[in-house]
Each structure stands twice: as structure tokens, then as C-alpha cells.
Image 1 (cartoon, rainbow, N blue to C red):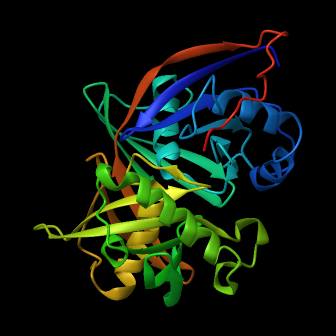
Image 2 (cartoon, helix red, strand yellow):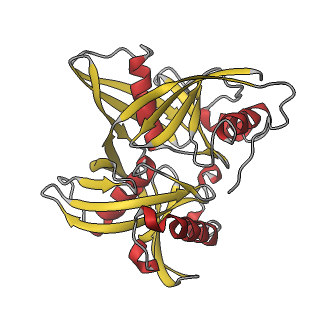
Image 3 (cartoon, rainbow, N blue to C red):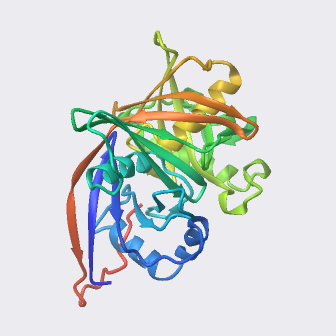
Length: 328
């Protein structure tokens, strides 16, 4: 592990570092994730994610072979604390990257479908094209569903009720106002602190344990402001505090999927409506229920991804910080 070339993108402000030829092993992407949690792949994650080559809010993915020929490729998503089961903003970035690099053929006008195997299942990035340019990416997620609603929880800010929802990963979600907060940059420190507190308080809750144990546990906390409605449907702003205190700058793709499932369940989002979902930095996704299945609703989330640049990282053999470091 001396040189690694990456391509960096962002989706609605959230970074995504794409890495080819990472040392992963397993017959499926889900198996590769388990194997990657220790050994060479985890060392590479730390090398590329943490300071001084990354930062505590960095995010990326190792491109892998697909589970079978029906997908274009697979990916292992990673962050400062390990490997996640789902990532909507990363899926959007990968779709745009696959088209830009010619890995998946695309028309000048129309749509290219990029099929990707991720640890939570098989997803799609439908890359929208006009005059030879990518104008948007639609993330079609795995079926998303309610796990529990109205769970009482005592926090350092008082008693609240929290919903648990699966959107490719398990999310705890509640109004920011229930904690006396707003989803604004001025409240970032408190949002992180309370998000971490709620995640760990509910991580081992029975309702957060799934049939596939590899998907169990609370991945993040979604704190929401209700902004009313647009002509198309509900309008909300959220911040997702995931892993152990990492802040999603985008509206969070898989987190938006979880919100779609919850709002569809409550009747606040009809099947012919669109959720306008803003982030803490003011970027936006639009989401809807594309299909209803026995396993839950299938959300589609539309956003935009942009290339930041290409990097070649080099490890000096005398560098004592090969494993990186975190200050959080």
C-alpha cells in the first residue's frame, strides 16, 4: 500500500472518494463488507479517510465486482468509523462517475441506468442526460420500511419520541424541535451531540435488530425541521448524524429513503407527491414513492453529483501516520 489513485466527487456537498482495485475478498458485496472490517481493506480505509489525507467527515467507496452479471459493479461504502450498509449520495456519485468514465454507456439525451450491488441489496442510479451532459441522478433504493414509531426515550434534553426506519440502513428520526434545536449550522455542535446520544441509546434496541444481522443497529440519527408544503408535497430540512458523529452535508440519500417510508406511512406523502428534502447547508434532494411492495416502499431520490478531481495518494515509508488519526 504505497500509491493509490482516487477520483473525488460530491453529491449536494457531501464528499465521495472513489477507489478502484482495493483489496477486498468475498463472493458477494455483503460478504466483502464483513471481510473488509479487518485487515488490508480496513487499513486502506483509514489511510484514505482519516487525517492527514482525509478528515472526520470524509466518505468514500471501494469499487468491487458485482454479485452477478445483472449489475454493473459493486461497492463497499466507508467512513471514518468503518463500512456502512447503504449510501444514497455515494450511489448518485457512482452513477455519474460510471457514465463520465465510459464504464456504463449513456446517450447524449435520455437516461442511462447504472445497476450497483451494495451491502443492503441491489440499487440503481438512473443518470439523466441532456445535450451530452449529466443533469441529475435518480437513486432507486431497496424497499424501505417502518421498524417502530413513537419509541419513548430520555435524553439530556428531556423526553422525546423516536421513530426507527430502515432505508438500506437503520435510522432513528425525530423533529429537531423536540430537542429545542433547529437544523441550522449554528446548532451543529448540539445536533452532533444529540444525534450521537440517540444513536447509541437505541443501537441495541430490539426493533433495530434485523433478520440479517449485518444490517442491524442504528446507523444514524435524522433530525428534521418541518418547513410546510410546496405545491408538490411536503417540504422538510434535515441533518443526518451518522456513524459516530459524522455529519452528512447532503440531505442524505438513504436517510431520505427512510423519511419517504415514514411520511408515506403517516399519510403525509401521497404516492403522487414529491418530498422536497433540504440539507443543513441548503442543498436539496427530491424524493417520491416509486413503488409499493410487500417489503416496503421503493423510494426514488433525485440529486446532482459533481466531479471534484483526481488524486494520487502516496505513503512515505517513514511516515508515522500511515493509519491516520481522528480528533472527534
